[in-house]
Image 1: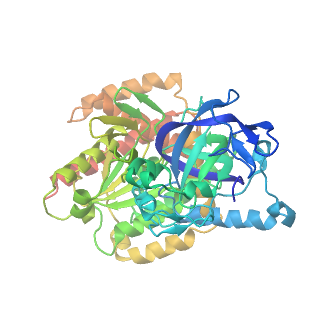
Image 2: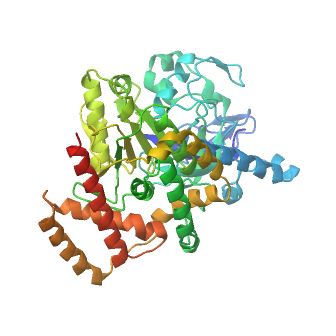
Image 3: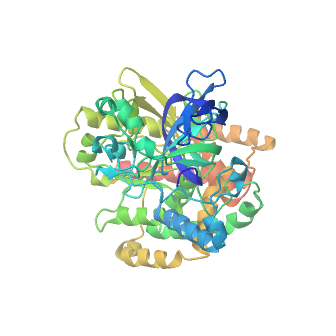
Length: 541
């Protein structure tokens, strides 16, 4: 309904050129001749009554700019998050008094009381059928096509929305997740397309009917730290995190060690990977990243998909990508600018921060990569090693920073880089009963264990962390000793990895906000075991 106050949570997929609008305009009553000043904010077109005429070139007109953000549903949402949002929305709707449901709110001061969701007003992308608007004007199918190209990950339930922001000082970036409360514009006039519009692809695309891409005039916009529906959007207090961390980590380690076929060492690295996030950038380094390659993966019996299915139950956003030759050679990984329509065509890697990307190399068969495949592999390498992505603007590349934890599953040595590579050493008894193990794990992952782990994996990343001064000399001495003891050269990057590992592995993962000597020694010990595994795998006949 036009001018209804709604709420929408989505990812900024594209940012269009600013739009001029009339913040104030003048109309004349055609009967009495009296003029009236009206406000044009939160509207697409000036509102005139049947007996009113818009006064052009009025000295009372005030023109301003508003920012246009093309938003889509958050890509790669896991099924439990979607289900929770649907259930929560229905629960809120049922709890409202009848008079509250029927009340049409239309004042910006009431935005904080809005809990209406922008859902039924938005249609699913990819709809190319012709539509009839309320004014009986026929909408061309040309204008409604190709919206699916704005989705990084295919999702039949995804929505699209054009958000109009009036705060000129707003600092939004592509791939930010934002929550918008604003007025829905569903005026039938937006459905009318002239012949001239049909010939202009850009005009046609950006003037799509509100039935397909609703316009949302923002009253309030905020960038979200996370999208976990079990936690407060701003995570104001860390007390709850500290209380649940140790128990949640024990639950998580038990689950991961089981699905990793009894390998406790890899389970420890997996936890570190799951809670890692980029906390600072320095030159070419994204400090805090912890991409993980688990090699020596058991093939057959759909093991990798079963492993991913467990991961999907725990995190809020994830995407499983089989690295087949067909996917590498045919899929678009990096967003590309379409200058004819003046829009950004999405790619698989246009994901919001903390979307867990699982790359399955066990699907890779012998064959030849074409030029697109080589480009895609290079993009994956840059994403993993530097946490950035170069978007293709055809005439130049534009760098965008990312924060996407990448897990690579491979049989042998991966063709992709990683911060940490660890071979899986499955227990023989677990190998024989792996189907039963997954069944047991799925049975174990029930409330309250499941909810505790889900909260933990999101919240622990936001804990404050410090490196005690008295440990700095200990770390320095151990680093010198490691350089002398190891056969291969130990570089400063190895020290950085150890520090990141110690930060995530035992300190923050257990709710400890400063590094202890015991944790540092445990990190060094695990790294020693990992390197021995790699060395043994290389020398194994």
